[in-house]
Length: 357
Image (cartoon, rainbow, N blue to C red; front, top):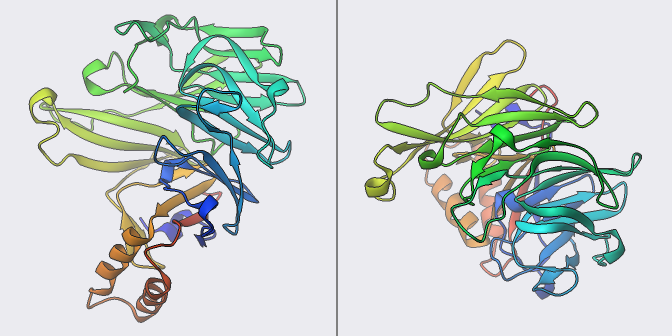
């Protein structure tokens, strides 16, 4: 599938080269809004950084540590431009940290929970002064460091009082951080999926909607029939306005002895919400520069791709060795390649998703 089929716009953003702006990026760590880019670094020793959409450095957001406004490991990071707020959620904690768009920590606005949550995601409703919380629901503890959860979803006020909730019950998982809670925020609904690693799977991975008014969880999408008898599958499920998506990784059933010694098969599945038609996508192609990708991060209505300069230089060098490359692609790839320097900050490629995908 071509990026042009998915995106209505395409930008190459060169991040600010000042020392304080330098960051090691990765696609899932990119959160894009109309005017800002929030970046969670690929390492665990650097702070989150805020940039403008032009790539100009704005501020560090908090810092790594255990003091006020600091964090050790983050699982969620998002920007609310309308309310001038940034939310950072640690992977295992009883709170979400809050900052303004200048990077100032706002301790009086910290969102606190009544229990330890795992890999949580939040949706803040300023009009109703409520917060919707979804967490990875650990109900069986095989590790004493992992707290057991009472609920999988709930609505609370800003004081932490629960308005209504969905108990863990049959949504419960074994306490293991290899399991995942995925919320890509490409639709208005409170949409999330729970994915288990193959050796711990108790049910099909599923994409859900949570109706915070009626306090109902509705399963919307799952995927099966993608494996043979000697395989297991790991799936990351999400959605865009007109499609359900799955990123599938196939593992041999004898995971313990061979999973890390063989090349794993990966592919994407796109299912139309309108008619249920299915596409298998092995690679996404970038017709602007001749690049290709085994998967894409689609988040908050944007496709996000990131490169460090040496990585992009190498990728473009490989593109330019193609003898049948279209002249216009060769010209663009050559121009970008010649403008790069190994000491540059990272480079982002960002596109807004089309409404018909």
